[in-house]
Image: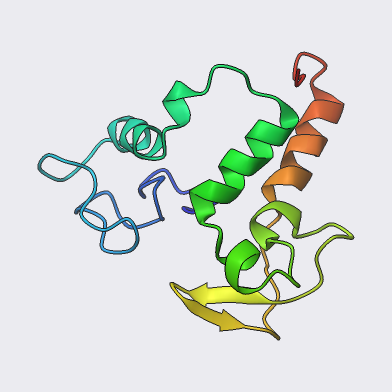
Length: 131
């Protein structure tokens, strides 16, 4: 979601692979640009401690996905369920961080939430299960 499915951007935040990240997290990955998408993606997953998860329950997956985007909705705007998970569902209507630390209560996410994507994938691919 961070890179809008553009494999020329960092998984961390959608910044171009031609340089280190300039948005949160800034200065990633280690090394010299340009970066391969796969190398940057591994860095993003390791940076967020996602490579250490041993049991991917649905609860754990949703919590880790929310954490990947940040807990700003949970801590600063609990009246809005994070669109990062719930956009395009009946759990989300409006309210969005439009930039790092800048919340707009009238903004509406135009991206499908990760929980909605997971539910759709699980419906189409029987092998996708959560313990």
